Length: 191
Image (tube, rainbow, N blue to C red; front, side, top):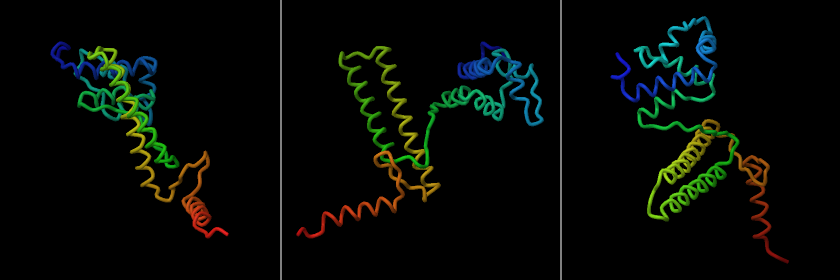
């Protein structure tokens, strides 16, 4: 298949593969990185994976390995983009406070609304306005992903429920004891 008859999505995937190879230090460095666990990857094959003039496509296991080694999923992100999706890095941690994640989500939503309102103030959306709105929407998307990841981690480890208060972490039993203490003080008859 000639490069001219290939779709834009195919060309973009080949381009992202080439960029990932360049990020890893070129063909030889990429071949060395991929030739592990008894698997030998040939230089000519890796060259074909990134060539617009080749019908060879990088296999999924090598995509995963390349993206992991490069510490950025360029190829995977391009695959998602070609299907109409967007990858967002999520940072869900079991010990994090869900309320803090919700507050961050609200702040990011406010930033997006502010960007949209300011961009539309003159009645015209230029490329700079669209880029600003897009950046804020990506940040909101990331905040949603972080909240969901934290919730999923919490569900997987139900005994890890903590509430972050004043920079310290207390288990639920400690929080409930503190609440009972406050409740008792406020409901006790005054002398």
